[in-house]
Image (cartoon, rainbow, N blue to C red; front, side):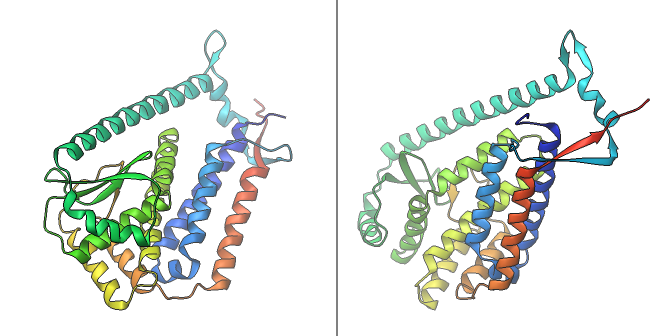
Length: 319
């Protein structure tokens, strides 16, 4: 049996599209989002991501013949272009070539960005934040090597990096409380390996550069990363501390600035996302509805099983 079939791949795309639409609807109904739970959606996205990365069939795959789909609709895949080269060979080549170019370009841009941060870290050392950093590290211990950068070339706080972590801050006055919020938020991203998850979905979106819903999935997943990080940070804070944190997020969202794709930014200008983050933070103590969560998990489980066990076959075309 072939481990990769067009029918199985099309079924995976269809099921993935259903999942992405369910995820989008769930995350845009705030009360429903709270009931389902952040971690549930995060785990479902990760499983889907790895499933898309390995779009192969299982030996137990069930072939289903669709009487309303005849193979003539797909005959053009087998059209011979030259010698033994067919249309689907060309499509696969274009897919892989474009994906490779995009991945190489992303890597080069990332290395250039990291080099720029290295230069900024040497030009503008940030000794003034050492005391605050030491206090935060007592609460969020980390083994990673990281550097705090303060520069007028940085427009908003963010964290970036794999082996070497950079926490960047704009050149402006921060109170002790604001610095504590920002640095704690960014260090929690590092502790949760969020940059690796972000890189994984960036890579996945480059591989599936022709699949429009992949970009919607990536956007929703990045929002989940921020909301999950907010949830971890505000857990245990007093109401006044939570309001202070919200105020800090709002202050860093006043400028409509283009955010670099490599970073995990502290805040964002998007009003809809700000509203969503504020709602989730203020409703941190809302209990997850077990029934809703169970139904949601059941739907995702069914979709996953279908994605690995069904392959579409077509009725042969008769002239």
